[in-house]
Length: 113
Image 1 (spheres, rainbow, N blue to C red):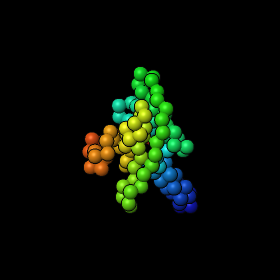
Image 2: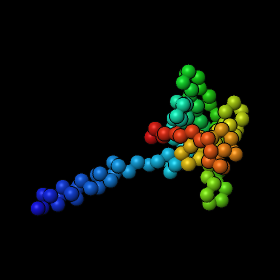
Image 3: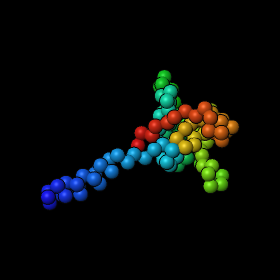
Image 4: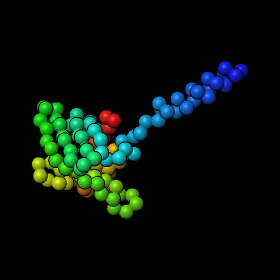
């Protein structure tokens, strides 16, 4: 009986620990993630970013986080000098602010860390 109780006490926290995965929607903005189409983004803590495409081309830029009210938290990612080229919100990447606010046509992302 003690052996079964010990196994349960040890195994339940381990199962919870390994099954609790942080979703992309709950992930803070900095980190490495990949889109459904295979574009790799590396958003660094110093607000710089590296975007790598399938054909091995890459682009260095910046990103910026925004907090409008209690519910609208998002980040913009620069590309080719255009500071609002990508929008990142709730685990999805959008191409314009209108779609981001409506949460339409977003591309799913998966954080690597």
